[in-house]
Amino acid sequence: MSERPLHLAVALDGAGWHPAAWREPAARPARLFSARYWAGLVTEAERGLLDFVTIEDALGPQSTLLDGPDERLDQVRGRFDAVLLAARLAPLTTSIGLVPTATVTHTEPFHVAIGIATLDHVSGGRAGWRPQVSARSTEARHFGRRDFPPLDRLDDEHVGRRPFPPLDRVDGEHFRALFEEAADAVEVARRLWDSWDDDAEIRDVPTGRFIDRDRLHSIDFAGRFFSVKGPSITPRPPQGQPVVTALAHARIPYEFAANAADVVYVTPHSAEQAASIVAEVRELSGEVKIFADLLVLLGGDAAERKARLDELDGAELASDAAIFTGTVEELADLLIEWRRAGIQGYRLRPGAVPYDLKQITRGLTAELRRRGVFRSAYESGTLRGLLGLPRPAGRYAEVR
Image (cartoon, rainbow, N blue to C red; front, top):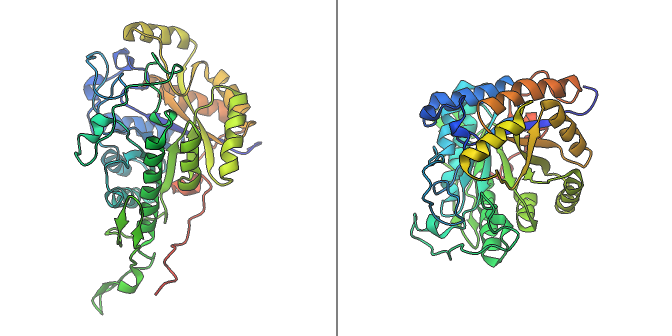
C-alpha cells in the first residue's frame, strides 16, 4: 500500500438506517427475523474484507419518541439479541470481526462478560463489544429495580429532530452516573476475561486434572455499582481481551471511551469538526482508535433514492451522524480528507441493505484499494490483529 491502510466497518440494523428502507424493492422484510438474512449481510461484509460489523440492540423497541413506544406502524420494530445473533453468525464466517451491542444499564456485567467471551471462543478470536447505556424510564420498567425520570425534554437544538439524538447528548448528573456505571461494567468484564490464565486448562488425563485451580483468580471487584467476586465461568478468550468499542458524541462519553474502550465511534459533520473532535479525544487518550460514523446512501441515483425514501417515511432523514449521498468515488474522497484530520477508520451505516452494503463492499473497497489505502486480503485471524492491537497479558497471571 502506498499509504497506511484505512479501517472500515459497517453498522447493521434491520433493513438499513433509513426508517423506510424495508420498503425498498431490493429489501427482504419477510426475512428480517431469520438467521439466513443476517448471514447474508455478514458474509457480504466479509467478502469486502471489512474489519468488522456491529449489530445494534436495545432494551426497548425502536421508536421515534425519546422515551417510550410510538404509534407508528410503518417502520421496522423489533430486533434479535445482538450477542446471541453474533454467536450464530460466527461459524459462518472466518475472518471478519463481530461486534454486538449489549446494554450495561439494568444488566449484570458477569452475564455480558461470559457472553462476549463465549463469542470470542466460537469465532476463534474475532469478538468485540459495544457497551451501551439506557436512560429511558420505559426501559427501566422492564426490570423493575430502579425508577428513572421520564425523558420528556430536549434543548432547542434537538426539538423536532427525527430520530432523536443519542442520549449521551443530553447532559446532567443522571447521565454522568450512567456512564460511570458503564465504565465499572467494562472494568468488571475485563477483569473477568483475565480471571483465567491462558494455561489454566491443563487437561492432564493421567492425573485426572482438567484445570489448575491456582490459575483461576478471584477479581474481588467492589465499586459503587457492582460487587463481583469472580472468577468467570468461561476460560480466557482467545484474544485475551475482546475489543471494546463505544459510540460517543460529547465530553462525558468521550471520557468513557478514553478510559474503557479500544475504539471510539465519533460523529463529525465536516473535516474541521473531525479535527476538533480528534483533538479533544486525544487529550483524554493517546491509545484509543478513532473511527467516524457516516450514514451512507451510495450510487449515481443516491439523492433520488433518499428523496423517495424520505417521502415514504413522511420526513427528511435525520441522524446523529453525517448523512452522505453520492458515488463511491466521492465517498472515498471524503474518507481520505477526514483521515488527514486524524480519523483512523470509519463505521458506515448503510441507508438500505442489501443495496448500500454492496456499494460499500464491492464499490468503495475497490476504489480505496485502487488508491492504495485498503487491504487486498485479511492479514490477521483476530479482530485485535486486524486493528493493530496487541494481545494483552492476563493481569493475574503472575499471581500463584
